[in-house]
Image (tube, rainbow, N blue to C red; front, top):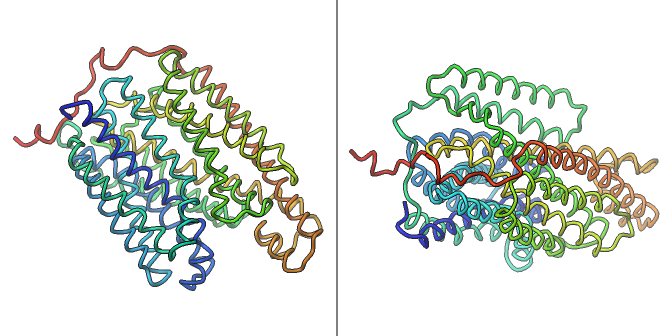
Amino acid sequence: MPTSRSRRWLALGALAVAMLTIGLDTTVLTVAVPTLAVDLDASNAQLQWFASAYTLVLAAVLLPAGSLGDRFGRKRFLLAALLLFGAASVFCAYAGSAGTLIAARAALGLGAAIMMPLSMAVVPVLFPDSRERGRALTIWVTSTAVGLPLGPIVGGWLLEHFWWGSIFLINVPLVVVGVVAVALFVPESRGSGTRPIDVLGILLSSAGLLGLTYGFIRIGADGWSSVADWALIAAGVAVLALFVVRQRRAAYPLIDLDLFRSRGFTLGSALATVINFAMFGLLFLVPQFLQAVGGASSLSTGVRLLPMIGGLLVGTRLGGRLARAFGPGTLIGAGFVLLTIALGLGATTTIDTGYGWTATWIALLGAGMGLAMPATMGVAMDALAVERAGSGSAVIQALRQAGGTIGVAVLGTVVSAGYQSGLGDAAVRPVSDSVAAGVAVARARGDGTLLDTVRAAFVDGMNQTLWVCVAMCALAAVVAFALLPRRLAVPAETGPRPAPVAESAHAG
């Protein structure tokens, strides 16, 4: 353990930098797609794989990464992942072809898959006191969430001043800071005892998550009527079912299914997944609205997302203070109520709505996320013994990642159906492909009527999608108020808690 309080917080700062890097990299690519299409002569399929390669590797490796960190040491795996992430960023920046960039993005996904659960897993090692742990998780979650809307801002600015590879090189100095700080301040820790590696469990979990995630990625592109995509999802679910059977029978399972007997872990993980569903849906919809309907550039679109970051920071700050007076059920429920209100306001958007209204509701949405997200993660993490923190954190992150991917697919399909329905007689290709394509066609023809129709159709589809999010968040609020504790729990440090097993404990 660190020898002083300052060393613990410096270590947390290193983890926050690492997670900020992952958040940035998740969304920074969105503004560079048109440039990459020209400079790398990339096809539409290759453009999709720039994002999908990262997502698929991330989903496939999350569960085994957490378990292997528990087995062999979380610090050493975290350092290796940071170094891999930095090297892959350089690889991306200087990729000379679309195929090379896809391979480099897959390597980035591998590094991120190890960083995410293990950076979260060392938080209870660093902060065994439950109150400090709550504040630490707030910082960890905020750094992750802030990086997502910052991606388009940073990417847009870099593309205006440098070449496209700079959007990946921005990761390198952050990785260097993270490596140095983790090496100096984060203690080595691992699970107790020597557990054999569940190789079959690793293969089943990776294959199942890969099939499920890729199936929903394809549905987001092909629509809900694709039989092949549904077959892929069904295969992924079937393999995951086999994985669960394997985990119940294995002497040394990859994950401890008994975790789901804990109401805190199950509900905390599920509610965190709902937040990710809504957040990724927002980041999918609002930039399209600002650009296609509002006429904003890529950089100014990112800047217009800043109110969400402001709301997020206010929400996390307020949540940290309220957590001392109210239980997690009240705090999480209030956060979801705020999310419900914000999304409901967003669902009243019209083609003539000004940016002030959009800024208001996305700021409220950020505040709701700030209240609810750290608390949901805290409820789930409090149910984990330190020795299984890696595999438990990996389960939480896998669920969140699946929630984000499924969220984009589901909400993308809803907005696409609403958009095409609103087009009426204008629902012909390429206008019907996307709002961006429709706006481009209308402007090329100089057809103001078509332009208004395209924009109004997209707004209608967006509003329908936001109402879906409203229903989900309202249900989540009811669940939080009804099933989560409304009073502060007894601090974990007052009762027995498994101590972290440091590297030195295994030296002899």
